[in-house]
Image (tube, rainbow, N blue to C red; front, side, top):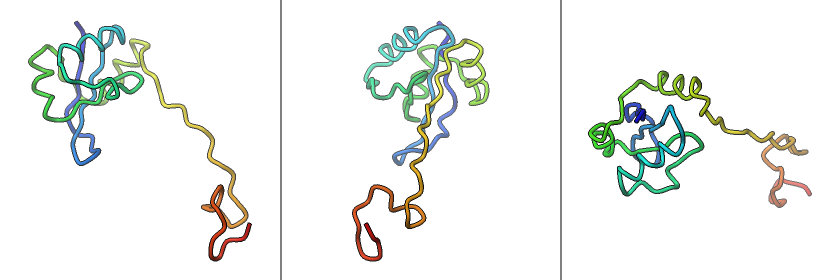
Length: 111
């Protein structure tokens, strides 16, 4: 298995997180996550799993290879498994100069 994990350094929801990837297939990645146990499917984000810091040592014990974050992204690109976020265009700026697009009129705002 070729599964990799970067150090838990990404903050979110009051915790630090690692990214778990496979350089072979998402099927391999999902299989590894099942082996870890108790990894919710919602932790999967397009091409990786977000794992909390307290799961890092366990992932290593099960065979995940530690790599830096840049190397992790490079491995995803080389494997062809990288799935970037698709950004939607920002809404047009409203008549009030922004911030009022789609909001109901209130004090100081006109319809």
